[in-house]
Amino acid sequence: MSAYLIPIKSAVMAFPFIAFFVSLPFMVGQYRKYGSFLFWRAVVLYSFVFYLLAAYFMIMLPLPSVASVAKLTTPHYNLTPFMALRTFLKTTVFVPGEPGTWLAALKQPGFIQPAFNLVLTLPFGVYLRYYFKRSLKQILVLSLALSLVFELTQLSGLYGIYPRPYRLFDVDDLIINTTGGLLGGLIAPALMRAFPTREAMDAKSYARGTRVTWLRRFAAFLIDNLVGVGLISLVLTLLARLFGVTGAEVDTLISAFVAPLLVFIIAPALNRGATLGKRLVGIRIVREDGQPVEFWRLAYREFLLYGFAKYVLIGFNQVFVALFSQFHRTELNWALFAILGVGVLFLVANLLWEVVTLDNHYFYDVWAKTKQVSTIHAKQ
Image (tube, rainbow, N blue to C red):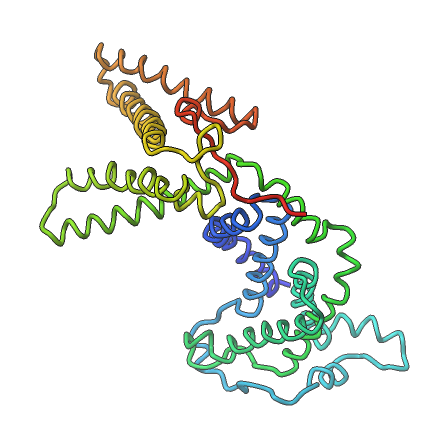
C-alpha cells in the first residue's frame, strides 16, 4: 500500500506549486475566451492537473538510488503481449471452474498490478469525454499516447538520470492503460449526469462574461505589473547600462515612472483603453458614457491609483515602522501618521464597499469619470 501512498503524498505536496504556476495562464485563458472564471470549471481543470501529476508520480516513484539501479540485471523491456494474463493464471489461486478461488485471486499481486494499470488511466478517459468532448476513437489514441509517455519515462531511466531502466517497459501496460482510458470514456456519460455539462458551463461563463469582476481586474493588474512594467523596466535598464547611464536614480525613474507611463497610459491611449493585461482578459477602460477614454483622463486615473493610492500606502507603512518599530516618535511622524492614516482608511473603506456591493467602480474611476467594460459578449 505504501508504494501507492508515497506518489499520492508527493503529488499533494507538489500540486500547490504546480497550481500556482498554472493559475495565471489558466485565468487569462478563461477570461479571454469566456469573460469569466467559473468555480466549477476551475474544480474540473485543477483536479485534472492533480490527477495527471499523481498518475505520473505513480509510475515514477519511489526513486531508488543510482548505485542500486546500476547493479540491476533485470530485463529492460517486455514486448510479448498478454504476459500479464499468463502471470495471473500462473501465480494466483484462480481456477475458472471454482468460484471460491475468484475472490482470493483478486487479492494477489498477479491481479492487483494489472488492475492498478487499468484504474490508473480510467479517470483520463472520463475527463476527456466529460470536459474535453473527445470521441471514443480520440480517447483511445490519447490514452495510448499517455501510456507511451509513462513507459518511455521508465525505459529511458527517467530521461537519463539513471544508467538503465529501474522499471520494466511492458507492452501489456500499454494495452491495459489504453483499455483503462477507453473504459473511462465509455462510463463517462453515466457519471456526467451528476455534474454540470460542458455546454452548461460555457453558457454560464458567457453570461457572466459581460461583468467586470474584481478578480478579472486583479488578473489584468498582475499581468500589467509583473509582465508589462517588469519587462519594460528590465529592457530600459539594460539599454541605459548599454549607453553608460547608471545609478539608483536612473533605475528608480525607469521602474517608478517611465515603465508605468508606457504600460498604463501610453499603451491604453493607443489601444482603445486596453493595457496588455486588460486586453488579455477582455476588458478596457472607457468614459462613463461609453465613449473612448481621452489621454488626459487616463493620466488622471493612473495618477490617482499609482500616485495617490500607492504612495499613501507606502508612506503609511514607512511612518508606522518609524513609530512602532524604530521608535522615532517625533511630532512630525505622529502628524504624518494621522494624515496618511485617514488616506488608508479611505482606501480600505472604498475597497470593502465595492467588494460588498459588487459595483467594482473604485474611487479613481469615479473621480476620473471612467469605467471598465467587458469586450466579451454573451453567447447563446
